[in-house]
Image (cartoon, rainbow, N blue to C red; front, top):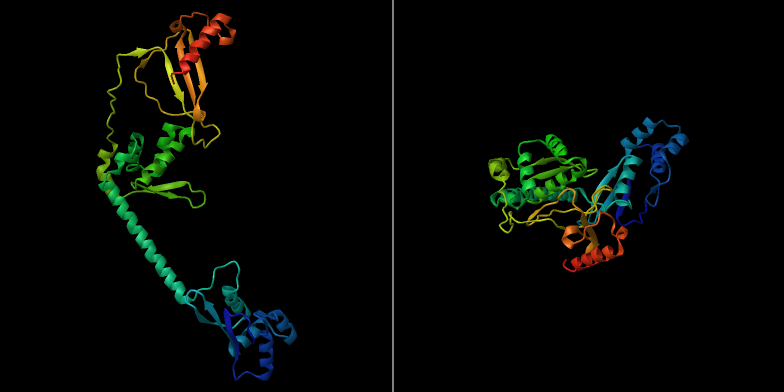
Length: 328
């Protein structure tokens, strides 16, 4: 059998010396090759020689076998393969002649690869354990926000099902993403490990080092932050607020503007008082909002749009707002 494929070498048909000449003819036709493809199907052989499938199978397994050698590009050597049926032969050929698979690797190289992956997996696991232990030693929970600290504390006493139920009630459907982000931030500090669904990447559970429970009280203790720069005795009746654009709007109903604001003084908004409000476009699509009593600018009209006010009042209000915009 001539072979023109260097990665599939030395294809040889071996026929037992005890095989009759008639059966040799059948076997040779059964194993006839054109290149590395078999010329005759088992069905053709059975029809030509009036054989059943069991008779053809017994004939080949008893008196013949095909030997071939497949090249392993990993170790640059050939591995011996043996086939006693066309299906086994085709399986061997596909290992080397399949455009959809990687280069053939011999059994030895495959075992070496499996062993290397085991070692790599063990090393990765040990490295992770070291990071988890270091996170506890370094008290990484101090890097978390107050919300994340309390969440971590609840992770230590709740399973994931009850945790979702608990925070689902607190946050509501539209803010549930905050729970996911907080869990991911806690994982970034190597305080928990998140299990995810391989299909949709949803969180399915979480794990942590058991000795983390020893620090539960320290984790959930939240110090009240006191800003000494705030004057609690001072108050104003004017509101000035920068509306920052929401960077990651993951849902259609996410707010366009969001953020956290801390006022340095008490702001008093009284009922039945006329206020002038203005909204300015600023850099990065942010907005700036002001709310000022009309009495602060010595104008006492009824509440209306500026365009509905008398021209003289329009000018006074417009000048006031334009001058104010220069201060922020």
